[in-house]
Each structure stands twice: as structure tokens, then as C-alpha cells.
Length: 82
Image 1 (cartoon, rainbow, N blue to C red):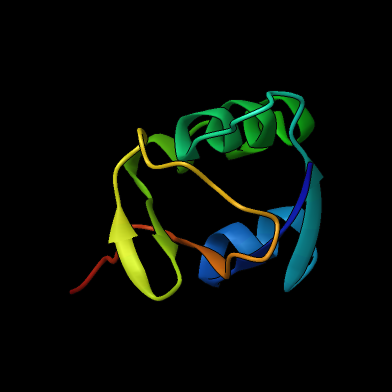
Image 2 (spheres, one colour; image 1 turned 60 degrees about the horizontal axis):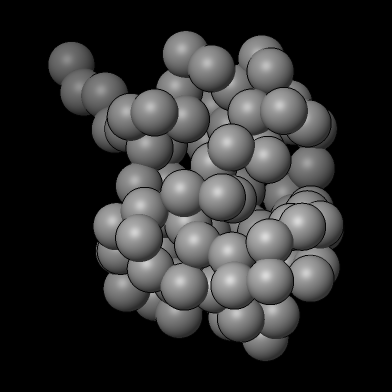
């Protein structure tokens, strides 16, 4: 299954795109599977991705949530302040 993923802030800068398409091999992929594939495809995300939130259909969810091809998925990196 292919899913579209919107990227923001530092994650967008690292990957170089606002939105990417990721192919997930599992029959019933989860957010955790998405994280694993993102790290495989973009290993430079390792410092940020474990601390980033994933929103599915505008709701922050855990790694056990199932994904559908038509879901709106966004990766929200940690916010820093100062």
C-alpha cells in the first residue's frame, strides 16, 4: 500500500520535500510500520523521528494505529522554544 505523508519543519528540510509517498509492505500497516519505513528510506531522520508525533486525519495517534491509503498523514517534529 502507498500512503502520502506531509512533512513539516526540520523533517521537511532533511527530506527535501513537503510531501512524500511511502510504500508499506504489510497487509495492514500501522503508524509504527510507517516510522520503520521512513527510517529505512531516510536514515538521516533518526535524530528526530523517534521524538516526532504522527497525525492521521488531523489527530495525533500512537504507533499501533492502522493506516489506510486514503488517510491524511503528517509527521510533526518536536517543537523547540527559547
